Length: 316
Image: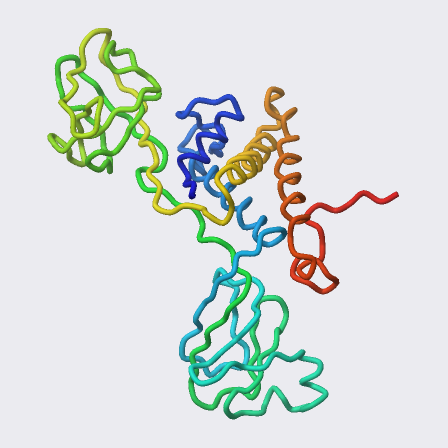
């Protein structure tokens, strides 16, 4: 069970009543230039944001990281997937956890004491402290609660302008398409190239300045016929490079697109057809509260990993 960007993107756009060529999440330049943030980039960021928040509030995703060859007293986990460490080990021993205030009471010069580390402590939110400070480099294995690897996709971001000539199989466009890349024409006045339909780039004729398409992967080349020639916007359909599997597919499909859709609705506050649907965030929050309620009670005990409910409860 796993879902990638393409499936979650499609469900988000379905909630928004948008087509797969929509630019609803795009951040326009405001001056008629190229977009500051392309729609798929923003949409992917929203989906990742929702997933990371779930794993910090209601989903326990255990994992580990390695901090290599350190001689530092404080070692940051800020740029890693680790957000709440449980155990810290060196190659030779598992270190004993202690509180920094307890350590200070035991050794008021603990920040200057050096030797072979025997203890670790949390310093702030994203620092792991070692006591004593190692005199020779050690490699740490840290196990604890983590966040998932963010979603990503391949294919161009945004769109290219492609010029189609009737009867000519090669479509002219500056592009970075790959063989078998799925592409969609946002607009078209050519009879047998239908806007919104998925076509596939074939190996023949592919270059940085042109490409040919087929109606199937590796199929026969399509020759543009009928209608009128023109220049059209062509978008590559994203291809997943990693997926989410920290929850069942149905839970992911219910929660993450609702979160992304609510963020897009708020971004488009001047669109009355969207802003009224900001309640999608409630769907996301309902899923988080349901998952939180199902956690083992030890996780929700005072001082526990998930002691605070993901959604604040209204006071009386």
